[in-house]
Image 1: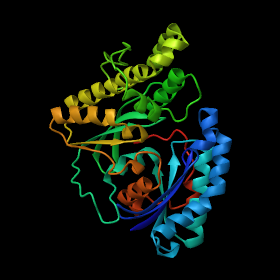
Image 2: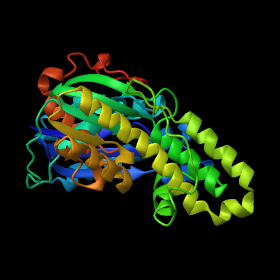
Image 3: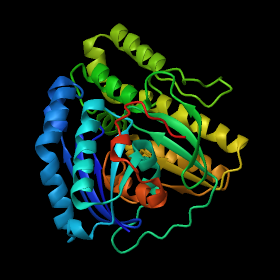
Length: 343
């Protein structure tokens, strides 16, 4: 089943063509440079850029896949969660194309897409993976930090989620505190700095370490970092930026490792899947591998870093596994849902 998929959930204008779970094209136009000076995504700028770019991105996705839209079997689109006015651009384009070319329209949850990024293959059908269920899914992005029990395809139970800031959001804010300037996105900056730092330099608390549930929280550790930096003063902060980054990163990801370990202890799990932009962080990947290995459980990540962040190919793969039974019988029922949850 060839699917043309569209994702405009935040600040990436994305379109892709997939054939079953194989990626034929995956085109993404990033708006990072347009939002960087503001230290975060500006909704109106995001919407305007999506509107200006969506036609060209869809056209390029089809051309790169050497596929005519007439040969597409279905169109998939992200309906949420995400930035409401950004989601609307992609949904409107998907509806327009589905109506014009009389194609089924499959709405996909964005976090479901991040989950199915682990199932995606390249155009030659690689890598071949035997992902067994039930699976534990760790979703870590700028707006989400969740642990999900996936009993089978399209069956989800959220075991734990952040009570405030997500891990990615906390890393972004930490970068601004440590560098004392507007940084967006900050996660990659923290990772690069941390490589040269001492992770034991600053004794930050491990969030939710003693809680009996599988929830996350990162507001407190961000505040702890801010107070520590304020006490240091600019000169000491400048001298120890790498140490601060390493200490903060260790605390954030250790909290995730603790929750992953607890979930593996509590549930019968056959596979661990990691999705979301923060999953590209090597420190996080290693710490999850360690926990999975202790439980003799295989862990799977997207086969390429292009599938960690927001993209449309993962939406197409998710749509394939959902199947045509998930199509919208009435296109008007497909509406943006900024706070959509997995269920």
